Image (cartoon, rainbow, N blue to C red; front, top):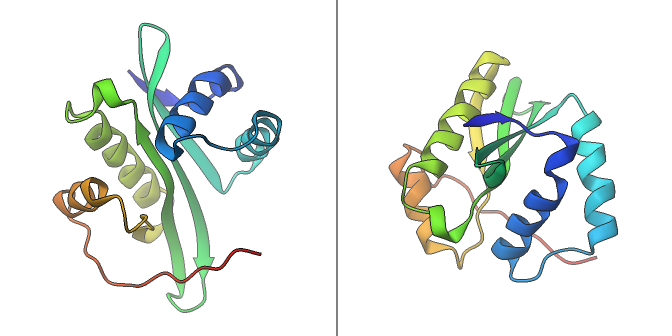
Length: 140
């Protein structure tokens, strides 16, 4: 079952992000960011749940960008629990995210993916996304 994320999903989503990142952010910091995301109308998170537990999450943001002259949707996180990968959960979350972006006037869907996540690169390519940009970053 896929639904919009709620406050009650905090612990399950925190566990998914920790699994994705290997450790993840501080719990209190995560909770503050989680609350902010739920309250920000530019953001949406959908979760896939089985038996009352969240097994996957997609977090998207929409924003107007000057260089596109339009709204763009961006996948900020897409994470599926290891035991549920390659079973269509990620594909279903991606599809609902794509539809949400389209329904909200976005003309483009983007994602940034760590260079080390080759499996994720293949996943996004299989969904029809092309590798068109480089992302540069620096710690502050």
